[in-house]
Image (cartoon, rainbow, N blue to C red; front, side, top):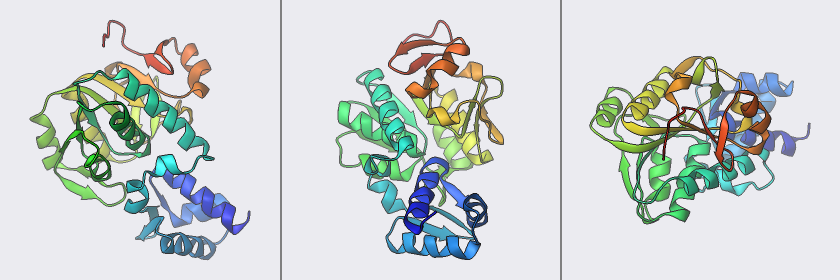
Length: 261
């Protein structure tokens, strides 16, 4: 694999997973860690990534510059744009909407800004708050300890802040979406914040492209039966049909029967 292609793949993987260890990238590409470090150095000089403690994440500037919308040729980014359009169209005007951090939810936040002017967004992701700050929406930022890997606030302060709020809807991204084990993520802190968002919301939407389906991460955010809707892409249609879900809008699937908008 050439240098340019490998660096493009690194950005694609970071867009999907958020943070990756340099050693894991070296194993993925069957090359030395020194080679990966040189790639990371090049990408860091371009302002696309940042390094810390043997790992790498997308730079905040990359997320602020609407990373999910930049690379038209990246399959996951295209799927996220489609998911964003579906969710933004489904959510009603005047709603109070909670959104956690992640590239899919960042795309959804931008979709809301494009389609609505009277929605209030509550988020624990500082990059999402920054993106929406000059787009005419009301934004509430959840306080807490900032995780530099993904720009989300977590911890007791975040949980306490969320407990004081009421949300009409919450849209949550996740690392794994599985009918048996539920909605999962890679850290205990993210799982706890996702749970807190869901408790305060009347309706819960999980958003994730088809690569997340049937996968599980270490920490469960929500049981399957605590989710009202699943927003995915057309690659999920066969599997979600097999799971017995009904599609209520373009690639928006009903999970809990009796749920109404």
